[in-house]
Image (cartoon, rainbow, N blue to C red; front, side, top):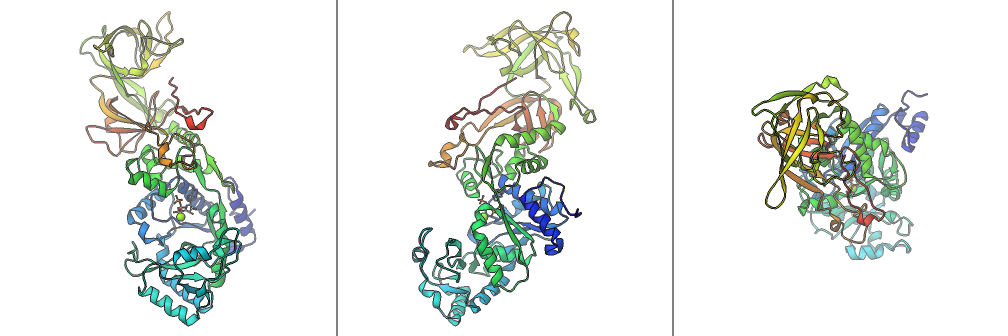
Length: 568
Ligand code: ATP
Ligand code: MG
């Protein structure tokens, strides 16, 4: 067995690489790249591509480049470049050498274009965009040769030079490859190589006013970097002949292999930078890193860990067939991870004051509870018990259903890590809303069961005077249907107005005020939460990463899919 054979779960790309290594293709080396266009923040689909490309390089002792595919100056921005670098690093990967840019190769790409013209394989075309569309034909009809296809090499060289010098307006001329206007593959019908764009570029400034097209740039950039396996998504399958054509025509002794795999799609969200940008631009969400966004930065802010996203990428596999992955798989991955390392704490999200009548006035007891039920290395936290405490409104009802395991009048309940209390009476305001409970406690029940009776249920609580106020944000699916962009209706009309619920008077254990931004916790009985960057010293903000169990159930008709809450 070759020592470079990978140990990770196999897939068809690994089979190709294993075979290449066996045949000593590329001297047995593996070099991949992740080539984002800096026109938005990365989403979960990109995370998959990052894990795949960097993962292959790692497992085969190769390297992976981070290359910005920056050929569209009008849509690109340094903010995106920076966010992408941050996201790749956060996911736990290191790119080879310095970051690369396709724009690093603009001089070389221009030179290769001149070579193509000199070889009679490229020409300057002066059809208007409308005419060009007409000449292009359709899927069922062949295209027609442009009348400019027969321009002489000299004329082409001169016009191309003038295009570069800025002598023409945008759209006046383009440089096209001379391939085959009758090809069954539309991509091969004399595709554009260069177009005029009088836009400043984030890397090259005003140096250029002609910019190379993606298909031309991508394959040559791959070859110039010595990439061995150029992994991309399925929609580029029909572009592969063009990828190969360019590399066959130009004088370069590297020919990477393009390999396509199925995009990752996630239900109840959209994975298209354009649509995500629309959500941001129209202020439907609060920025690219809004915790409801399927962006890497959104997941980070939501409390997802790099390990959980890498695990998710692995579990979704690498295939040739497009499909939609269920959001609950991602949620499963983060629960798996946080279960092991998130410290436990109690937070009362909807506080209801409880007065323990037989508890001594001014008495304070310091109680202790483990930070993790299994991992004793994490140590303990201290809790304060006193006469006035808060429990969650949702943990009390006067009208309990059968087998109710929370607090109700005349019944006992265990306060987690503390005593057993019994509800004696209820105080209401003029509108009949419950404002306070009067309870009694059994002093003999700290750390032990009461004698001769069984207490059903445990609820969480915090002390009233030694807890802190916090903001708690609960998030839900961003859209109400599984495929918001697969319908014949604007995807925005499926926005879930309940995707963010904010609780501004939650109460947290005293220790939690010291939490760091980005620190993960389990709020017992509620879910996993993370401290948000919008926190101040006085008012911490916590985002709900995920509930403790999968609460999301869909009705048979997806259109009516709604979250259904089950609380234990
Ligand atoms: P979008 O459609 O969101 O704009 P894109 O493909 O245009 O995405 P790029 O910046 O060009 O975005 O993508 C960088 C790399 O990530 C490409 O190799 C692309 O194939 C890959 N990628 C993009 N979306 C997905 C996805 N949903 N699943 C897997 N890989 C993806
Ligand atoms: Mg793209």
